Amino acid sequence: MSTELTESAVPPPTEHSAAPSRRTFIATTTAVGGAVVAGGLMTGPAALAAETGAAEAPPSSRVSLTVNGKRHALTVDNRTSLLDLLREHLDLPGSKKGCNAGACGACTVLVDGRRVNSCLTLAVRLEGAEVTTVEGLADGDGLHPLQQAFIEQDAFQCGYCTPGQIMSGVGCIQEGHTGSADEIREWMSGNICRCGCYVKIVRAVEQTAHGK
Image 1 (cartoon, rainbow, N blue to C red):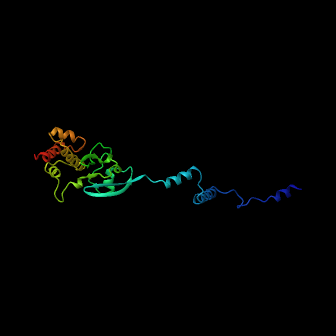
Image 2 (tube, helix red, strand yellow):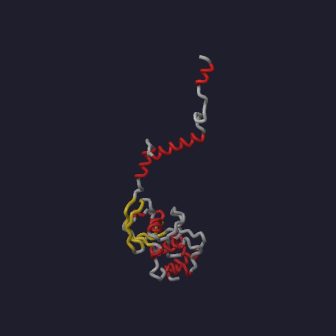
């Protein structure tokens, strides 16, 4: 067999038999990959983790409590603070979220008559409790005496800490810690006023406690 015959038996390369271009390769592999995902072919630990995450929900509990004289029963995430319950579930934004770490007192409310930092108090632990916020102090259009005293003594500036200051002041008076200005300062020391209205805040508490 001649060399010419052997060479002529091999077909010359054509456009259609050439190696696929880079663009064609990428488009093909992308399409195949999409089909695999769409077909739900994910297996192994990744698939198990995805199914477990979708099935699990945050633990929640039912809690019933009275807020400003009104009874509420609701289901909340077990991690929900009293502050978030008041602001996000009951639409009571008077209690402020300051440090959210119990250091500033802006979130102070009364629980069964005692002062608490609502940002550190879990709502699910308050079954049957009575909570009073700044929204519950006034009697209709009539302000609570300490609210009125804050106005008369000009005991606020920006006002952000004021709800917590007032609630702490009410608790301070109810607890009987108003024997002197120094005692008031000591028992109100957990409430920070970044505007520096401490002198007038003490005067407002004194006025309410002693009619000064």
